[in-house]
Image (cartoon, rainbow, N blue to C red; front, side, top):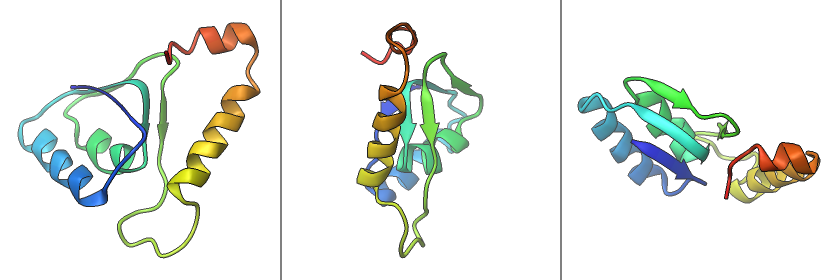
Length: 95
């Protein structure tokens, strides 16, 4: 499975993670895998591959009551990306 996801609803991420695990699916991150993708789908993969220039960002859990929101995480990733040089940005293949 090739995935690029900014995250999503926790229960859907868990359900997909169980499916990936039960079917021994390899997970390839092409771009980004954040939040529910990183917490539940990526670790469930039989083999896990992070393509060059891709980002896997974990935060929180289903039990989290406070902390950084998904919006805060995205904002942090965007700020870090914007600090890259133009050649480094082109090498990320995030288009």
